[in-house]
Image: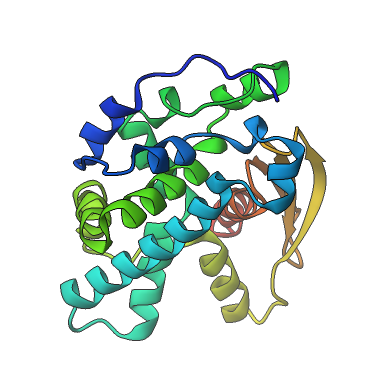
Length: 233
């Protein structure tokens, strides 16, 4: 098994989460990147990844419930757009940076994974794993309270967030053009910190490219660049 990089004391993170863990092991597991898992553990599923799966669902429910209560006159479409903007990797990464999560995540000590510590691609997954640990240790209430505290600024935005991919698609439809086409130009980087170069094209316009830590992020960035071009025409 690979040796871990030095890490900060998880108890300091627990204070930021506003929760005293009855089972500190859960928080440790949420902070232990799969790069430290042995081959057998990776095969059967690392606790980190299982907690990440759970945390994603807990966050989704908490945000959906919150939107339902906060915007009583919003229809399903508006709430869906708000929800997508609040649970995406950008939102998770922003909160992870705010609470200083990177200093607590345990990573294997090799050049690829050490680079992963510096690469913000690992933070959204770790944030979901931490939310999963909060839920398992204390139930829904502490997980919801943490989410309400750190997502408050974003949920209070008065206007429905505009997703560049959706906006570009709607623009193309209004112009009577085929839907935008996305393709992967390049896929690089190690499994834990991938990089994707995505190209988007709309009939009659030169394609635009952008790089991101996931296909979704790269697609949004590329769509935003192409929107800047088509709107000038």
